[in-house]
Length: 329
Image (spheres, rainbow, N blue to C red):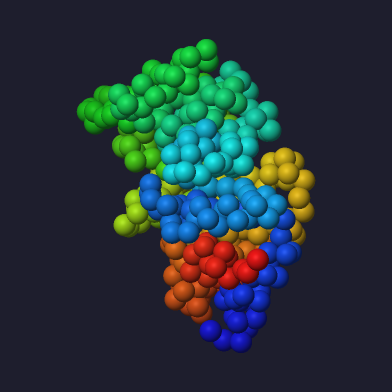
């Protein structure tokens, strides 16, 4: 690294780790590649989180992965032996629903979801009707528990993940004209039917919003390798509609607005911890937070040091547990 880079990004050390710790009241963590990879916890995470809580630090988890709702993320943390409340979780699925809510999206309009359960559940909880989404028998069984007492429209709408198209002469693809927004997120069930449905809604329904949960190119969906991220699905709809989306996940600071309302902590007293420069670190910088990059996920040290990279975190280290190991109490 050149001198300018050294000045901009510091390798975490016992000295500056203490300075960082003392200057921060809240640590904001990304999840994929920081807390876990797939369903496997990254070494030392539980002990580090426990230490931070014991020292009075506020912990918040800010994830771009929209496949789960806040409730489902809380359950995942619990299954991995970590207690996290729904109020401490800010997911892009939640952000999509809140964007519609704060902007007065009409309740009579529907939302087409090119994504998974997390978006549908957060839309339902916010009082909106979501259609589209994934489909397997397991998904329906699991969602039916949630939907008791709520509108059951989502049950019949979870089948788009298995639908196919018929490219025949004189065949017209029909879509719901009451759809007022299309939300695109990570979707392992993406298919040509969904792409056409979302495209038609955006192109033909007057005023239809195009919302992206995030534009991550890849993510650690499993512990051993990266997989295509939501950015792939978003790019497909950008291509077919020739329109750019409203992005509600990182690096957009939309979620930060809700976080500030809830916790009343100055962003200058927060540290964003993440594994991606273009989402996590940029999000922290855009919001005025301190930033810590970890190499346990997508970004490598060579990527950080590349002369073409212009996103520089305040600090960088190998993994979250280095914070625990470098501090002496």
